Length: 73
Ligand SMILES: [Zn+2]
Image (cartoon, rainbow, N blue to C red; front, side, top):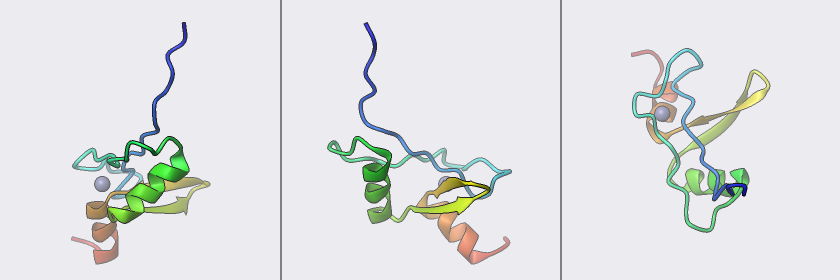
């Protein structure tokens, strides 16, 4: 038997490509969200952002998004 993937998890890639997210955050996707697109829509409601970088999507949790926009610390 093959295990079925239930839902789709999107993890934070931030605050930048060389640094792991200090919170190891993942979007708390709603029960009905089963695709990456649906989960990212959930994330946007929670303050997540997704941007293109280096040919792929970079997902950032609210904390890392604020860090990027706030500049160097
Ligand atoms: Zn993060």
